[in-house]
Length: 248
Image 1 (cartoon, rainbow, N blue to C red):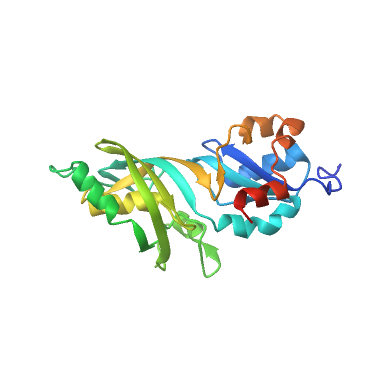
Image 2 (image 1 turned 60 degrees about the vertical axis):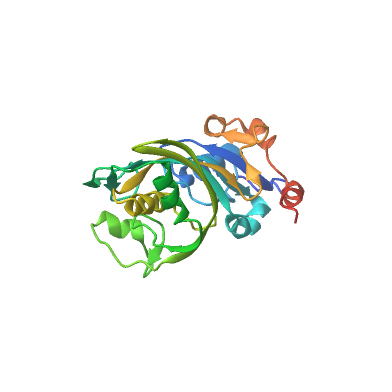
């Protein structure tokens, strides 16, 4: 069987800005990128859930050496939370665990007060359906078996938020946050703070560090899947370009 990954091109190094679509994992994107570019040394910077769309950074070749550095930078998301319904995954893909009526006095003032409680520095308890490991086992594998374990709170930071639409039970928002932040837990916790519960109904990552959904650089999943290699490589950000963008 021929080797799908020929000898690595020493000049094939850099960062791809992928616009991830729904219903695929970040690993799915990496696998398709490897086939398209015919190179195995590819990693991603920050997992997006299958439901989520938007910016996924792929590091190619020598750029894998700065993978952890890029993953550590702050992120920006836009999303929609649905109040009154809680799920076991804290997003729309999970099983409904509770339904509660919305508070009769729910208005913009109450919503803003709830969001304000989760601004700045605080601790967040990661969801069971996550890749965090407990005794070497990813939590999501335990969750599949119906197990729930105690999770250590994690320090996170919300730098800023914006309420973009308030039409209960739905709220559209934008949030700028630190690494390791779970937006679905954010939606869940705000729903609990309002007394009615809630879950994340939609999510799109719009920024990671200094990288944005730049239309001149963005690579779509169909471009990768169709093997449009030259078109994809034309949008590759070289390591010097990455350093200039980051101000490094």
